[in-house]
Image (cartoon, rainbow, N blue to C red; front, side, top):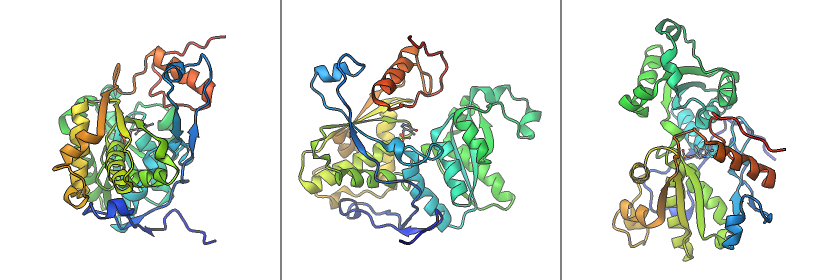
Length: 347
Ligand SMILES: *Cc1c(COP(=O)(O)O)cnc(C)c1O
């Protein structure tokens, strides 16, 4: 066995279903994750939280992408980071700037992956509390985020933490804020790789083209519907393009794809997924599929559901109760978001 380092760049060859239709295929990737992640069938507990599914005779299997790596790196973001940081290393960058919510999983995973690969992580975190920090404290780099959850990991990994308010985020947009911080670092001599929110770029999304390739090899022919949370659109884009193309290639019934949007509106995500497809250089005329445009293809395969509830990372006590009951029933811990209310444990 050859032992490699997390900094080793591996040549990347796209799966057949993808290689003919995309014009911007990455040539290198890292191996930071523990793949393939398992697919588990959920046991039917009578009278539990999933009873409504059993009543409809729906079988539930879960692709455990939460098991893709350790707690600091694991989840769906590592798949994207394997392509993004390979690109950063290939381009000779020494620093990364990215952005997310105050308790962003993407920022936490980026910080860990950066340190594994010898890159300095700069995280711009969005928070209402950024407003309450005085300008003097901001200049000294003092923030008000505390030491809990993902921010604790961000700090342990020695991330440089920058702050922005939701207002600034809305006014400038995530890409512009990343660009501004990158520009400042470059003036000071760093070579910076910019990663947009959630790592959902034309490069990062290859993580989920590969994710689809992985699960089609795990006996996925019994799947009718694929359901997942959607925050920045890269996972939705990779799954939509990957599934649409892979099942067409296999001449099998294509599963229906359901993205549950945890912020923004469904229309935003349709546009985002189409725009990622364009960045990946998707040319459907090379696929043999009947769709005339990326928009047609996306509307045909993907349904985006409104799932933001009270807002991004704001959970109701009912939602947190569901998270707890599901964990008791299955041992699977869903992301509770920012726990802004007290969970009522029943004795
Ligand atoms: C980021 C994230 C998502 C959404 O993925 P996107 O590609 O950003 O849409 C879903 N679930 C969890 C736990 C995440 O961290």
